[in-house]
Image 1 (tube, rainbow, N blue to C red):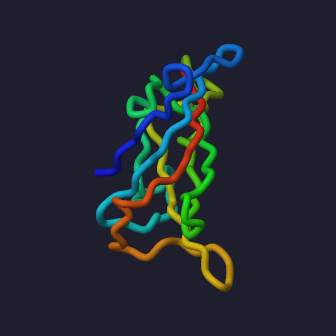
Image 2: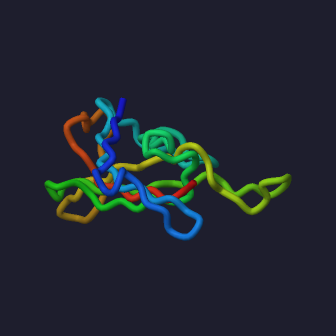
Length: 127
């Protein structure tokens, strides 16, 4: 299971207008599963809002790891088209695709790669 450590940044999160932002170091899973495109995508690595000190996540910005080998891209939940939450895409988690830097650029990290010792700095925005 991936772990998240909130960076000691004035209590782990700040408020920007009506949104909360949390700066975190996210440790990867012991056995990565590649992302399968779907709505929502499956596989990858899950980042939960609760682990970031939030109730919901609206966006995630990935900075990469300290070694310069890994980066990531987070996929939001689908935007709600009907009902009371129309037009919102905030949810309790997002799917994170881990990317590996190669001579040819960034490619998705191989399946079953142990990423538990690798941390990626992320900025999570939500409520």
